[in-house]
Length: 374
Image (cartoon, rainbow, N blue to C red; front, top):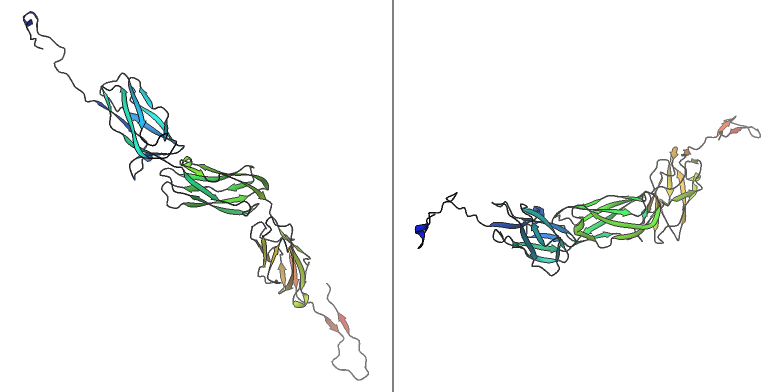
């Protein structure tokens, strides 16, 4: 390097190890998150109230190793809308990337999430703010009235689940958990991100009598935290199955109307719901017919009389010739009766021996009438 000035005559030229100096551009600080946490509709990052989103604060790959950087994060949205796991981000020497978690507290429209370099300003500058919004959690409703929709051992009850909208990301799964283990089983409903179908169903199957106890609506899966159940808990009972029974069932029958037999159908126990109607219908059979073909029972009318008439030779099972339906589904679909077949027989013949085709006046003749062995 040349020397100038009034005293240059007594100084030699300055020597240097290198003849060039490299000037580097300032490095950038960027803010980003996982790709699926960006709303394609408006380009903003998002989270839901009560959920956390990871925010990546990145110094990139600096040309020279830094000696320490401090970055301050801030949000321009609604007051108290978010909380930072750490709003002041420290980068020790050589560390270029870290993650901060932001939790949604209050809903907020898209607003600037920005970074300010506090230490290291001579080297690093922020690239600019990104947009962040906080969304309300989505309501989920299970349509279930334990007072009218009875859970019964051996029965399946299908319940409807409705969501207000589909989450922007992740899959929601829903199940019902009963407080008493082994009382019931339940299928799982599922809602995918961005789905247009906002209803799904679960099947609840009673296994053992239990309760009353809590039936909890459990939300899980990647999007489980983005929803809330409007009614998270119900109190219900898994009830034993009730039956219609037959009294006076004959051990055998003969064909024709002259040999009709009368039976009684009755409720083995009273229904849980006083308004319940239990309908018993005759199922077509080649051996027997019931009259009337359809009857109804209720708490106010728990018994009814039915006539059976043999149609043809064969056997029938009492459990197969009647179908039971109850409005509450509390009663078994078959009657509670013996499983022993009831035979329907043809009319028995009478034999006559010693019959003469002609007689004289005042003659006497003995005939032998024989009945078949029963």
